[in-house]
Image (cartoon, rainbow, N blue to C red; front, top):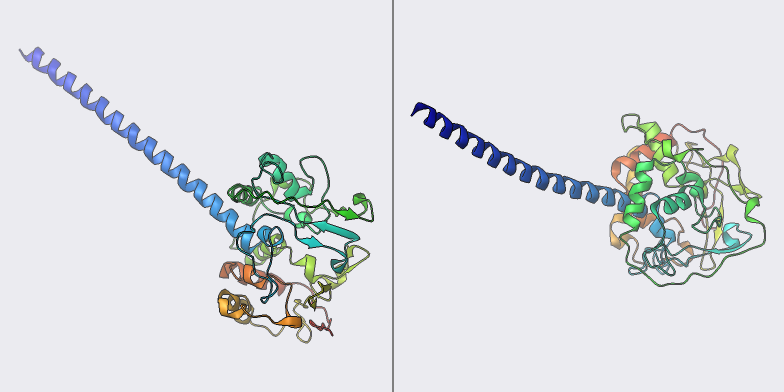
Length: 321
């Protein structure tokens, strides 16, 4: 009798153990799926943040409305490409931003992640063509692999748009315009820890390609002794604007600016009332509305980095006649 009771007890123990294992496995599976979904969601959100407010992929690859201050994005044009870049930006000819939506004919719907990564970080397209460096791949080349993957994940979510972009027309061979890249192996790039705010700020600013507008160029090359000293003229027909000196020079740059003033300059454009007007010839090519969505900490980090670069005395008139 005792043996029978023991056998029954052992059987019930095994049944309960199996049931518990099944329940635990179910919970683990559900948790794993949820965790994976949350992870993917975070990656896409990070990519959207970078594409809209730091690297500004959506700025150049969409249409902007320059009847309003700083040309905010025209809704519904996200990623369709077709923006024109010509001699007013120092380009020897004319190039057009590409369609980066998932359209399989005129967009990048048939591109692999590796092909998209290559064009972002090296400027080389799926068919082996090389982009003119108005696309700042020389700067994106320094971004971490995780951030690049995040941008790709977000771009994949853009609605397909059949917009067909014209072919570029350059007066020089692309080999003459290919820039030096920041990293020989982007796969090894790492985003600096935020605890080193200056180094992190340099990373964010490079990802935002600030140098491309705020450093003057001569014969297609950046004048590095005037790094971030402004002075680049942009004449888009509707208005002329010259990039500002953002070095810590106290007379002609932002040396007298506090961190709070620098931050507020961006935060101001988070309010639609600040840009929903037509300033005419006092407009700006600087995409303030998109940069305004940058995280406060990232903006402050950029400021901290800018305080460490050489001050350059370079007086700039931002809106010449």
